[in-house]
Amino acid sequence: MAKKSHSERQHEQDMKTHVPQGESSERKKKSKLRRTTKSWSKGEDKWTLTPAILTDDDNGLRYEKSSAQKHKADTKQNLLHEGKQTDHRIDAMGTVIEVRGARFLIRTATAEGKVKNLLAKTYRNTFSENPDSTLVAVGDRVGFKRMSNESEGDMRIGEGLITFVELRRTKLSRTSGTSTESEQVEHIIASNVDQVIAVASATNPLLKRRLIDRYIVTAELQSLPVVIVVNKIDLVEAAEVVELMRPYGVLGYTVLFISAEDLTGLDDLREVFMGKTSVLSGHSGVGKSTIVNRLLGSEVMPVGEVSLKTLKGSHTTSNAAMLELPLGGGVPSYLIDTPGIRELGLWNITAENLSRGFIEFKAFESQCEYIACTHVDEPNCAVINAAERGEIDTERYESYLAIRSSLE
Ligand SMILES: Nc1nc2c(ncn2[C@@H]2O[C@H](COP(=O)(O)OP(=O)(O)O)[C@@H](O)[C@H]2O)c(=O)[nH]1
Ligand SMILES: [Mg+2]
Ligand SMILES: [Zn+2]
Image 1 (tube, rainbow, N blue to C red):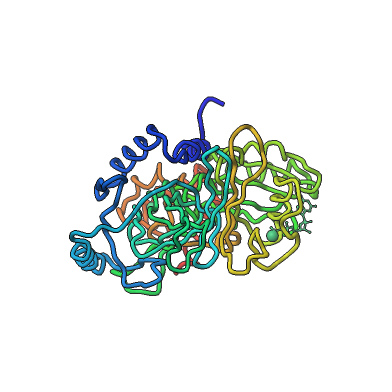
Image 2 (image 1 turned 90 degrees about the vertical axis):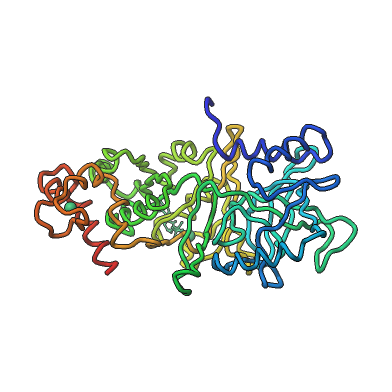
């Protein structure tokens, strides 16, 4: 493999940063911290952090505060810490693979480079490079302090304290609509996702391109690549469905035609997942659980279940999980599964930004007579004209209109 994927590099990084006392790993850690944030400062024998943010939240699980509140807290914190520095040690880095209420399951590595999971929680001085958003989400890269013999609060031996949350490379998010504009906090559903896999079925339920368009728009607006999977190809005349989906290939989207039942196209599907962190989305009944079971090689996911169960259904408090797919290839592959994503509709999509989700509009939009053209009924709209000439697929344009009117 010529190019290394993000998860592969992360994996290697995990292995490196987890050698505890070694000179070089210590140096690596230092230079990394210098690079990532200016608020790190050198302590006596370890790197310490001057906290940028303090919340009044005692359990310290989130700091969903407005910038103004944060600024105030910042000042307060600086005062509190004059002459007294809290320990913000980072013993190791890891990836959050599951959210269990107030605790987070972190996948990390031992000094010998073996994969190890550990439970950790945040505290009021957890430092994040992601302001105004959920403190810790599935997929986050975090630095943590290992709890040893001395117990801290209600921490147990073998658990960890998350001291640092790394800047998110990508994210699936929605803005919490409950508070006022200034207090809006980005709610992170999952972070560091490489791609969205939008699943539809050829039939049963019937293939609805309009629905696929919704998943595409959601992914495009989150700036995430999207791969379209049409499942249950065993139930139909494949050529017809391939023809129906042709416009997506023209737009540059990868479209796979598979059958999780008779395993058609499963190798191509594995290829798509390999070495990446993916999110599966798609309407209920299209075969997502069956697909995951095929990728896992076991019946982990309940098939035919309508309820939104997590991958690890036994943890009732769990609301998001990241699962490693045993696809080989020398690179780890992950699947993120959260109730919020699976049957996702539209988030963060407004009448104003919707057209960004239709990538083929871009080439024409600049030629519309009106700058704020909505491409609905304006005269001399280049998008409408292109759709009429067949340069924009008519059905895609109709999807745009349908989604737009559903937003109003
Ligand atoms: N014929 C056929 N049936 C499938 C295929 N994939 C899944 N199914 C069936 O479709 C139903 C819904 O599948 P499930 O995986 O639970 O869908 P989910 O709701 O998207 O997770 C189940 O009865 C599966 O056995 C397929 O490729 N072909
Ligand atoms: Mg399912
Ligand atoms: Zn227009």
